[in-house]
Image 1 (cartoon, rainbow, N blue to C red):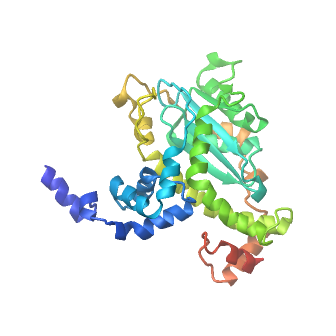
Image 2: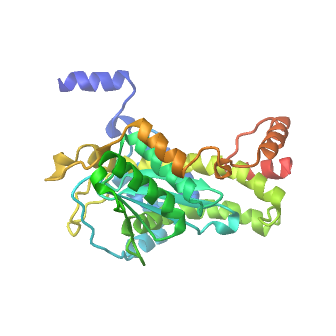
Image 3: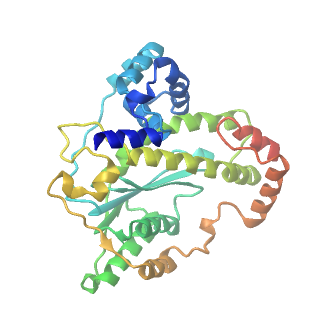
Length: 351
C-alpha cells in the first residue's frame, strides 16, 4: 500500500523533497559549491540533478529563488542563450552508437573521449586520457561498453579519423562473426563535417556545465609556471595525478546525465525521458525496438586481441618506473586526497 511504501522509505532514510524540507539557507553552501565547480554555468534543473546525486532532494522553484537572489545577472544570461537545433531520428536503442574525441584540453596534455547510444542519448563511455589518436584505445572503450551491456549495436558511427578505425574494425568483425552473410561489408558509418550530431551536442553540454571549472584549476598551473607540458617529468606527474581525479568526476557527470530527465521540448521527435530508462525500456515510449545484438565474451576477446591488445603501451597511464617513483613520493607526503583544492599543492610537493 501507499502507507507501507511511505513507512519503508522513512525507515530507510529515503525522504522526499517535502520531508527533507530544505530552505534557501540549508542549500546555500551546496549550491554555491556546484556553481564554483561548474564555473556558474548550470541552471536550476541541472543543479537539482547534481544535488540528487548527493541524495539531496530540492524543489526546482527553491533553487530558482536562490539563484535569483545571489545571481540575478547570471540567470538572465542563461535564459537568453540561443540553441542550435538539429533534427535527429532513431527507431530504438542500439541501432547506432556514436563515438567522438575532444581535443580542447590538448594544452594540458589531456583528451576526452565519449560514446553515446543515439536513441536514448545514454553515455556508454566518457573517458579522459593522455591521447585520443590511438585506435586501440577507442576500440577498447567500445569493447568495454559491449561487455557491460552484453551486446553491440547494428552500426557504429564516427568522424572519418584513423583513430576510429579500431572501433570500426572491431564492430565489423563482431557483426560478421555473428552473421557470415555480412562478409565484405563495413558495419560502421563515417560521418563527415558536423554530421556526427549526438556527440557534438553532448560536448556542448559538457563544456557548458562541467569543463570550465576544471580549466580554471589547470590554467593556474600554466600561468603560475608550475606546469610545463613540454617537460617530460612534469607532464607525467600531472597526468598521474589529474587523470584519476578527472575520471572520477566524469563518471559522476555521466551518472547524472544518464539518470536525469531532459527538459521536454515539443519540437523534438524523440521522447524526452531519462536516458537509462529509454535504453532499457524503449517499448514504454512508442513503437520502438531494442536492436542490441547479443555477443559472447569469447567473441569480444577475439576482437580485443585483434584491435585492442591489453598489453599495448597506450593503456599505461605512465611508464612503470615512473609509477613506482611517484607512488613512493606520494606515500612519503602522507597520501593526501587529490582534489581541486589540493591538486597543485600535492603536485609541487611531489615534484
